[in-house]
Amino acid sequence: MIQQILNQTLTNVYVSFTEAVPDAYKPLITIAFYTLLIAIYSILMWKFYKFLARRDILELNLSQYNRTEHPVLYKFLAVLLYFLEYVIILPIIVFFWFSVFSVFILLLSEIENVSQILLISAAIVAATRMTAYYSRELSKDLAKLFPFTLLVVFLLQPTFFSIQRIITRFLEIPSLLNKILIYLAFIAALEILMRFMFTVFNLFSSSGEN
Image (tube, rainbow, N blue to C red):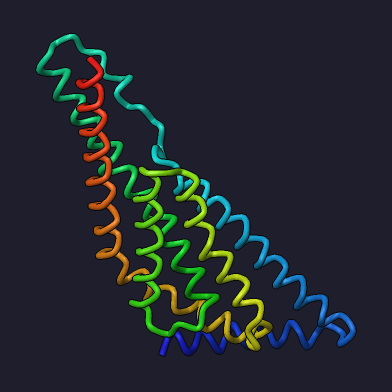
């Protein structure tokens, strides 16, 4: 009921605005709106793939703040800082980009099932993070392929110039975010596993060289 009221209210506001604009200028309003939408989407997706494709997303190097000389305390702080950087901070940042990506898929695609949208978003983000530990170039290609393909498909849709559709889909965002935690947990668990395997591999590599 609330969603329907908001939908009707936003639609009425848009209709009232467009009716106040002379007919000769209405195409300019429409093209300005979609130009802004495409520009914002392109910038965010560019940031998205540049960011997620890096193996070391944060590069905080919190271990530099571990300056204690006590061996037991040093190891404890090392584990604590590692946990803070890769188990707490990193999932929060990935959650932000995962949410942004999911919202854009919701707005641009014809998929009606929220769970399917989240599944696609989670799979792409997780695959991007996994391949980042193998090849940054591969990860970048994977991260940018789907978003920009989706944009092309959206531009070719007959409903592209439908403000009503954008408003309706925008109001579905809360239902998207309500179901996002299980997918975030999967991505976070995968990141922890990949980081652990990467650390162990480097440890054994260093031991082999010595």
